Length: 219
Image (tube, rainbow, N blue to C red):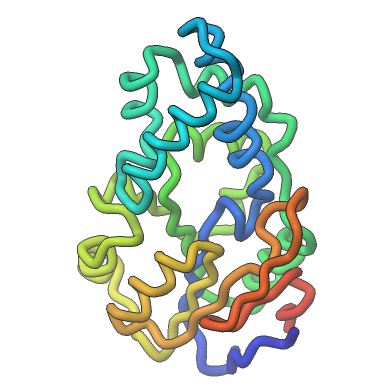
């Protein structure tokens, strides 16, 4: 689809990383498949039981900074989560046309900022794999801000650290909870991703304009 964004009025572009610019398959596969195997083995549990226990723990932390914290899960699970993630880093890749879109933003003179809930160590891993940092004027992690993007204080502190005009800013994020928080804060131009995970079906989303490929909005 062609999202209803007037790019001539936009100065600041806020972009999520996982599921927006990069394929969410890496993260989903790790948390839903790879980690349960290793954590279950460590605790003498079969994979199905491990998945159920982990799913219960995940659900309690969704939308909080802890959910995105490698330190939190390393402590909770008693294993090195970052090291395990490195085992499957071959799955880290750009979503369709994301790199071309980023290049176009740079060529057009927008102020481009990554706003991500990802842990700093995971950002470093993904930068090493993709060189995605070269496209951004700033990279801001929720762990530096001290709040997840789903929480209002994140946006308040972001505004203090990096003032932006609500009408001249666009946020693209695959997380609907994040988009709702940004909308509540006052950001007007919001887009989501219809297919954040290359290995899962497209999602039908009515609440926000959704793109399936950045080719839909390359101007």
